[in-house]
Length: 240
Image (cartoon, rainbow, N blue to C red; front, side, top):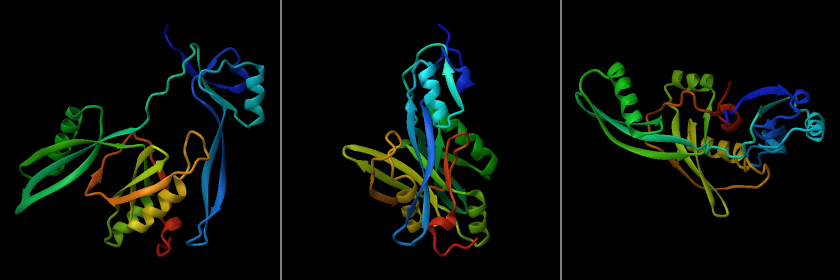
C-alpha cells in the first residue's frame, strides 16, 4: 500500500496515524557555574508516539499541550530511520610550490559519491593537478556550529573557526558530536550546555568523556541539519 503523508491541524487528524512523534517543546534556563550566565536549553516531551491512531483523546492531548499541527499517514508506521549523519573524511593533495594536503568532511551515502563531489569541487577551486586520497567514514549524531555572522567576524580578525569532536557517554551508549568553534574552551562549553540531554528522554544526562581537535579544513554540510549557537554565549572574550 502506498504511504500518504501530510501535515494537518490536530483537530483534522482524526482517523490518521501519526507519522512523527508529537512533541511538546519548551526552553529551560540553567546557570553556567563557570561564567554565571544563564543558558537556555530546548527540552521536549513525547505527547503521542509515531504510529498512534489519532482519536478524540489524542486530539485533546495535543490541544492541551499546544500542538497545533501534526504529520500523519494513512498507514501505521513505527520504524524510524537512523538519523546519524554519515560524514566521510577525504584527503585532497595538490601542488602550490610545495605539496599541500587538506582534509574535508563530506555528507554522502557511498564513498563513490564523496569522490565525485570532492573531484568537482577541486576542479573549480584548485589550480593545477590534484589527487584524492583516503576516504574514511565518520559517524556524528549531531553538528553544532556558530552562526555565520560570528564566523564572518572571526575571519575579519584573521581568525579561523576550527572543528572539534566531542564524545558523549551515558551508560554504554556513546555518541559523537561535531563542533565548529573559535577555540577548545568555546567548543567544550557549547557542547556541555547545549547537548547534555538525551534527545529521546529529554532528561538523562550525558557525560563528555573526550574532546579533540580535528585536522579538517572544511566541512560540507549543505542540506544537513545543524544546531547553531551564538559565539558570545560561550566565549567570555567575544564581543558582539
